[in-house]
Amino acid sequence: MHHFKYRDNELYCEDVPVRIIAEQIGTPFYLYSHATLKRHYLIFDEAFEGLDRLVCYSAKANTNLSVLKLFESLGSGLDIVSGGELYRGLKAGFSPDKIVYSGVGKRVDEIDYALEAGILMFNVESIEELELINKRAGILETIAPVAIRVNPDVDPKTHPYISTGLKKNKFGIDKEAAIEGYNVARGLENIDVVGIDCHIGSQITDAKPFVEALESIKDLIDELRKIGLDIRFLDMGGGLGITYNDESPPHPREYAKEIVASLKGTQLKLILEPGRVIVGNAGILVTEVLFRKSGKDKEFIIADAGMNDLMRPTLYSAFHAIEPVVDNEGQQITADVVGPICETGDFLAVDRKISDVIKGDLLAVMSAGAYGFTMSSNYCSRPRVAEVMVKDDNFYVVRDRERYEDLVNGESIPPFLDV
Ligand code: LLP
Figure 1 (cartoon, helix red, strand yellow):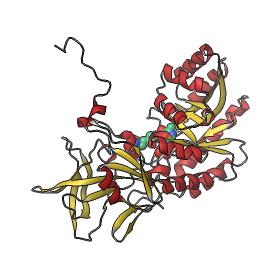
Figure 2: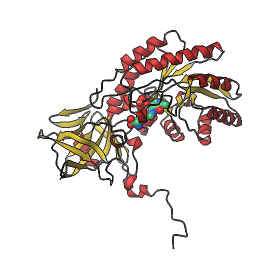
Figure 3: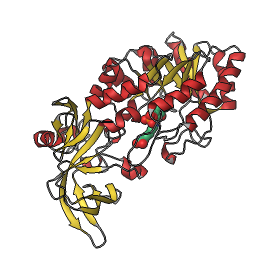
């Protein structure tokens, strides 16, 4: 359930007509509903009621400072994958001891930054990384808390680009090598083994792969405990899917029920890293129709938002519903909704049944709160769009639209060219 609803044929975000925001700040822009973000976080967290757990919202889905601040204020921790995300997290007020750091390629400066901040746990993805973290912790005279990310080799049945827990994926360490890794870890002076981690993929619409992964990790935890390792944290990663079109993913409560049942009696603190399920349906991308054009075989709706603003359709053939902001209840047509960029892959939708909109009409690209703005770029020197948050009957620009000056920020022309 989200707070983007029609009233008298006009799309509202909570109590604000989306059209009004477009009139005041121009298009395109991302629009987030405060009530939806809050509701989704609380539903997810409360689904695990009674269990010792920490929800670490996965920053990569949407790193806007106001979004982060909201989750921080609700008690969330944070899952990060870069120094930049750590910077944002600290700026939003997250306590470092609620931050977990994943990712296969952590650099020395990023490791040092996280060690100095005093994060809860590094999710380590290779032996070389483990050794580097140990070395840096030694130099900084500290102890690094770590979990090893285990690749349980389960098929999450999602898009191949966002499946991460298969043998062929670059993530984690396979189970046999993980035991070896833990043996190495416990011999390292500046490493404290505190947990175990896995993340099998994203946009997963079935609870089974999660349970399979959990069962497989539980066996491993038993073995590790037998050899004297004190595994306290079990990080299950993120990955729960949402409805973009006709998917029917388990409700967070069903997902939680399965996990909680399987965790009974294990004496583990559960860490979860949800991203999409919290923010995905709490945001939309608003764009204006620039032109209509009829090709020989196709009808085109040319919008002012393109693949640089929302990459998901072209990168993963992802489906995002597209709705008119003001619904004139006209006829439906079949059209491609395309952007202004000079690439054939620049589309928001292909062969889509859509209202017969005209130049100047506004469109809402739905379910764009996750991996929308965070994956946007300046390709074709297009300033990144504004981000707006609605609360009740007010809206707040939480990130300004970039200006042309921002596009050349940091660039310089060396003297030999400046003649
Ligand atoms: N934890 C780790 C270690 C991850 O790699 C990810 C996502 C998450 C948590 C959060 O997963 P979520 O709950 O959002 O599924 N750009 C793609 C999704 C990439 C996901 C990458 N990792 C998309 O737009 O579909």
